[in-house]
Length: 560
Image (cartoon, rainbow, N blue to C red; front, side):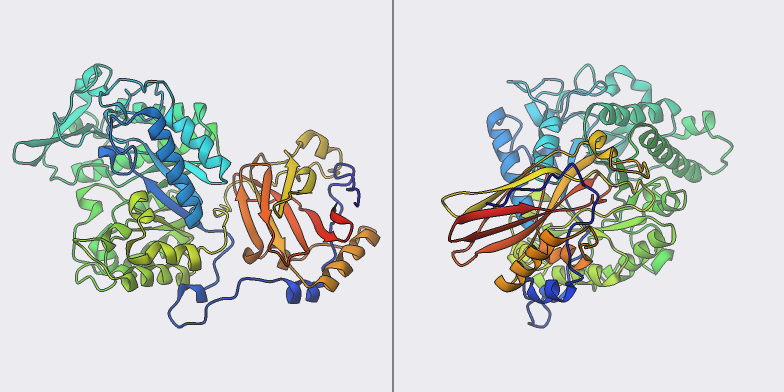
């Protein structure tokens, strides 16, 4: 068996010749694209794309199935959900950790959620921390985990269940606004006009940032309530008007101030963490000629202001309308948000509604797929987020099968944000390969060591922290494989990898583990693997290649 080369000694020497580019392109077996008209498989999936799913906890919508479910069953269901999302091609999970001024984690500010244990303020028994658990499990699968919070909401329906004595509404009753949502029903929330409330919500976010390895902070559409707002906060306005003469402008100012304060805190504490908001689809009807509910005037949410002020990294409008909706058609809303995000150098991820494929909406499969096609063809939509996990896994009318087998047929990295660090991690160390008797190749590698790699970094470029790994596989005819492998053995350092080696169709895994297991078919005799480390901002390290083959003498591998 060939002995591997010392990967620490020369980690920055270019690694492979495929100026032999023609060989690489002609020999690689990329998955063939379906030719049937109208199929999403005709479209080339991007290498970087946000493929998110909302995992909803309030009212036990997605998880856990009930608040009295035993802890071990909660964990097993969570693992099964993450496995299913990974199999579909999802690369980011938006986990609702604070739906009603409560917590699905050991919060320093809010009580344990009623929807987790059946009693607000009561910890899981036996104890575990769901956010910590979800972060660990998502990261091991190479997926991002974003903490999804409702910043202001306290009770969706007042009196639905007893509030803990530690609930903010019990400790600070003067911070609470109450709105009539329907006859004899009331919605309660924190008062956005109070500076103390802004500080409180920001401190909740800061607490998460300091204690959990989350990849993002996410707010949804609930700022001021959907129920009518009249004069509930008029006294607060008189006291804290900040010179703003119109109370509606002041309400939007309050929300914008919170968004900016959270953004600034993230930048100060953990700048690789992304911050995004998912507003109602329509800001103003005047933006694109719609005629429906307006988030700007009813929820006091101004997504355009957040983009212009660059206090968010992405906007994620909830585009839950049909293409031919008479008052709010899908395409103009998509184009509007993609345009204003691009003009302000921020990302746009479309919020999609697979739940509407189910009754009572009963969308056709073609309706839902045409939205995906529009998103990808737009060119300025960097991803999709699906509401919600249960509906996505349920595969309504075959929708999820199309994602898995066509649009998401290759794994993808989340998009790199140009305004965040472009530093790359050091390359992986000590890669190796072994063969199992049941026909599997087992690749393994060590975590990159920035200190050791710095010895061979004459320009002293900073290294990013490694967040996950990408494994590429290239298949080619035997003679081409042998020619390329022998060329690398003769390489004097002048040979380099070309971009074709890193095409999305060659990605076989994005993982948080330092191992990849690949099952070979009966007629496979060789494969070239490439392994890169990836930063939190999806910047890849320099690659290491592992040549693997079987001949009459057994299994061999060589690292380059």
